[in-house]
Image 1 (tube, rainbow, N blue to C red):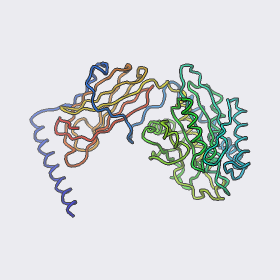
Image 2 (image 1 turned 180 degrees about the vertical axis):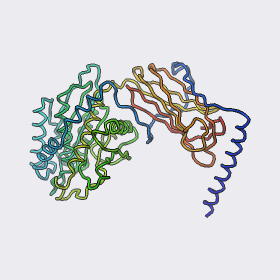
Image 3 (image 1 turned 120 degrees about the horizontal axis):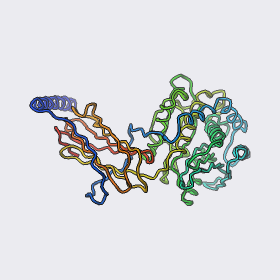
Image 4 (image 1 turned 45 degrees about the vertical axis):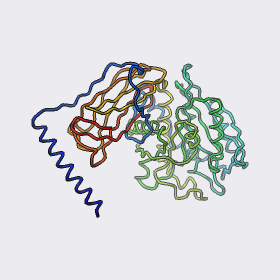
Length: 446
């Protein structure tokens, strides 16, 4: 009761203050100002609290522009239901594939032989961990850019629980990995792609744990991991039109990249992406060891999960194929983009207006940079729509660019107001920073 009264009075007070502001505006004309100051080296400025983006957001970085749409479309169109179903049936035919059993071993041999038939570099990755021992299967398509050590991984798990054929969990993901390997092996990409299938997932990601430990020991520069686990269950048109993607905060850029691909090639994929937070699967230990990774999952959780009825007949093959096309297109786009040589660092300062400072702390110049500032909450009279954006061609390494904005409004005193600053480049991962603020006329208090 009292809380409700406080909120009510708060809104009345805020309306009155806004009324006063409007009256003040009648005597003068105010315009927002946004300017890009020439870059200067970072050590010429005083250090401030720097915020590296880790928060969830609605900022979508652009997909790579080094290749034409026709390149990705050609790749997408090669994957059809016949190809997908063929791989799916082959895996499911091994029956329950419990880690360490002959069926799991035979399934691993099948995957190895399929990779080998594609002229990929293939290996068994033997592991012994948690009281189990088995093998992961890895195939590598080496990148053509000799200056790049970047690695992009698509993965799934081929083991199951007992008494379960595991059609959706996770032969659906393995079929995606195999189809991706078959199609992409016919092309060349700037960066290295690894196609990996894990065992031991059902015992809490044992195989992927050992794979990650080896990658850490080897110093592998793994940029992105696309984990495909359960993508074939859809009963309604809503289920069949949406997919989920789980990510931790540092991996947000991969989620946004996938959304960008889904939008750009919607006519060929017909899927919407629903980004969510964290959930455990084979990407878990990549996260825990500092690698960026996402987990692709069906929109509606499978009714037959871990039961004998997890069979192909209870899957939606059309949905699974379209889902696979989205992952395939995302992987191909990532593997062909410019090397990631730039790295952004953001700083936000208040006072008379707002200053957003974009620094490049990477090893190379940032190219084709785009920035955006959003005022989320309060009553912002200018900039119109509470959003302002712009671009700059390059930002040299160890340099910075400052954007000054003169907003006009009121907020943050009664109800929350957030300022969201983001920046992206063709050769850097997009980053974002959010700060809670108060605005009174042109003054920004952070």
